[in-house]
Length: 250
Image (tube, rainbow, N blue to C red; front, side, top):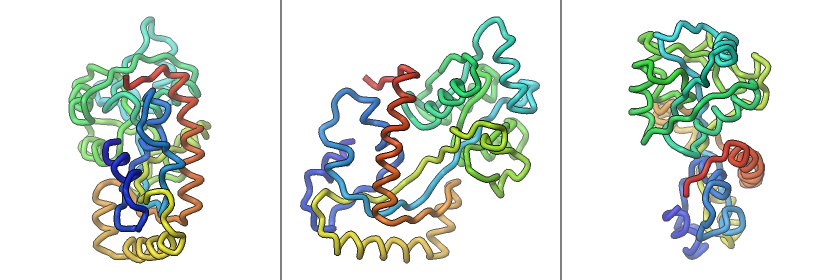
């Protein structure tokens, strides 16, 4: 948010840009005060990449499907515990949305990052976690974590046997973290168009595509309007989930 404030106050000449993550659309609901207007103070240029999430359980938990996890949560005398990389991130809010759609209760255990959360998950101290692909995939491949569902619209090539939440009847759990470029509000439209074209060309570069995919993400360009609409829609979507979950970063 410090970087975003700097860009919001910069000259709208196209030389100062902000690479922003999907938390940009969550922060207005998570924080009481932000020193800029998330929509009015920026001009979206283009999406760059998307990163779906995966719900995983430790190998020690003898659960082999999402239905079994839901059944366990409904029959246990105490709520299950689930981990996240921190309060208010997409993995946390995705797990809260899963709880709402599945009609289960579970206690949120926030950690300072995905690494310590994964450590406790692997040890069986928590029952499940919604995590990004980069952090979860190595443990899924070596068998220490079991993937139950992915948040992408279609099955992932790296996990072809893992169903999507959509397949399993949870259509609201089509969720991806995303990254994109913003400029300060007021940047001339011809500069927006030029930058958008340049980004589209860069995203076709094989080395760039390889770097993005190595991070567990997929290349995802867009028009300026498509990115604008995406931010607007997600501000509305996540404000509801933040409110229902009671999440706060204060």
